[in-house]
Length: 320
Image 1 (tube, helix red, strand yellow):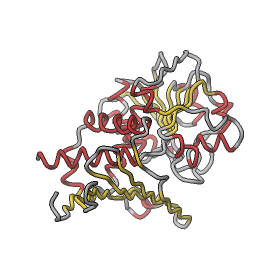
Image 2: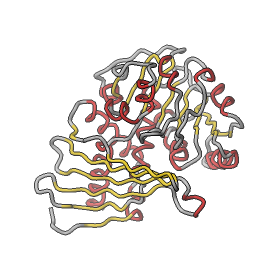
Image 3: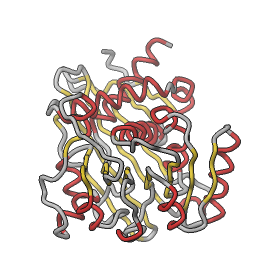
Image 4: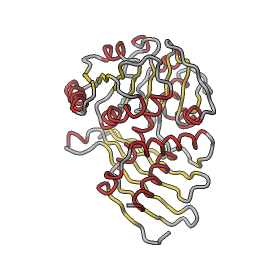
């Protein structure tokens, strides 16, 4: 590798986005994690109260890969009031033989957003109910919007329902989906969404459960991706006690700062109640799912996903 550090901005990365390739890279990363091929400590995290925000530092190396990566991703949730995006970040890719920096992907947080959307789509399909008519999106931010765009890649055409604390934002998000040719509408209350949807994706920075366990009907599949820092919480802990199957992107991370860990600490499930999503995707694990089974996938985001997507885009850039 050259000793010169290339800096690649978001404008060079966007034209290379191919959802199928990103889904393939993230699927591979989830399998790497489940197979124990990833050297990756728990993420470094900075939490801010005024204004509300967080910074995640994730880093790791996949055994046998020529590079390793360090990713910084921020989310500052009052930014829209300032006319700024919520998310930002970058990924530094380094040579695993010499330790020399190779390329800096100044992606403004988009690679993190794309790999999270891909993981969401894979998690949704992994235990989707046998009869699926309506998919609920809880949240109105970037990750909620990307879920609407990416879920059809693994689920096919479905009706979508959107709920958020801002009814105006939820209506806008549903309207945007309709402009893309999707069937979508906004829910006025979260009860309406939970009653109508067989699959629910939660994508918020909430610090408290968004609904009560009693509001959830049997047979619902949940994908929770917002609880990715200490103090965040989207799903009621009691919901985990009802789950026929619990999947995590990484056991240790989800136990440390995911909704799964919140349920364990509250005494609703044991610390070994989960399975790794990557094991299911690889075929190492088979889980039967009945029509009335409630299932949960807890996603906290993996350094392995950052490594995989950074490697994918670095390869695509070298071919461009």
